[in-house]
Image (cartoon, rainbow, N blue to C red; front, side):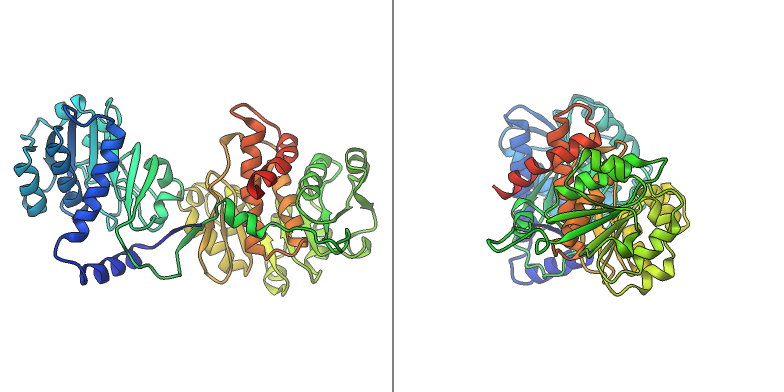
Length: 476
């Protein structure tokens, strides 16, 4: 599992480590890792042109010491000092001793145009509010040049703890981060600016309470439900799907398609799209008598394509089993009824739906995804899966937010969310807690999207059919 920690936690760990090390040792560790990453990216160091964009913080010192290492290997290294009176003195002396130079005023843009590599050491993890005016044109010049751009710890101009980008920021091809990931490296929109991320171990002793978690194959494999020898379809769990309408029967079919591949032993469908469901999936247990009379289930999915059927949503919310609320169900659900539930609740909005629930513009959710998912979870007392370019899953208790690392832009297609809802609901019925069900479903769904598209357009039904392949890939 990958983890990301807040700036405050990282700084505390750094202070504790520096107290045990000789002066400057921690910065030298970071600089060594940064220089190695730059050398790997360049391929051949001797004769290459490197430009350092150096601010006043420790990131500037890391860049200078790394530049000195590259200069000793034969690179031509020039430093552009954005805060000349506050440049790290030891790093600057090391660069000059290794043969590096300081760029003359006005020469920076020409140096960037001719560079093979630009190192962003402008602002550290404490920066906020975007780049300052003096740095903005240099960042833009680097982005438009032929040079590879390497960010030190995180791209300058992004918000380390939130992933927000509130102004101009550096766009990196590679970010070399130290000790641990920072939230901005995992959450959009800042993640887009980071490029490939390389983590350098500098010996930090970090606590167990991370700000973010990103599951990996081994974590997901450990959570996948597996039938035992004595299992039958009911012991494996039954998921109920209350979805679809005369206008949107396909939503019901797609939600059932995801549920059938999600680990539960049986799927019950309730709603007006029963004929369409049974024609496509004859193994589904179809009822038209409403949720209360559908038979026993271990979890419900309600809302995909439900139209204006508020009564069914209210009926499902009254059930004392885990409930997943999606799509129209989010609009129709009474907030008080959601908060009053004692059984687990998983809400799965996209940015537009989340904005409506929070009473803000969609752009506000997209620009502040992390704070939005946390606020929704706290406001509704539910686990919230916020769909999007980086899918986030937050529990109401304020613990670490899960960030989904799988997926593809081809998943932005009609019906894809219905498949995800069915899949997550099936995992709930199989016994996974809401946070795990949402996280595992998002992981498998994203992986299935990659397999289904393989670089080309794919429909939601293709994604559903690829879930078993994703499941096997994780398991094996």
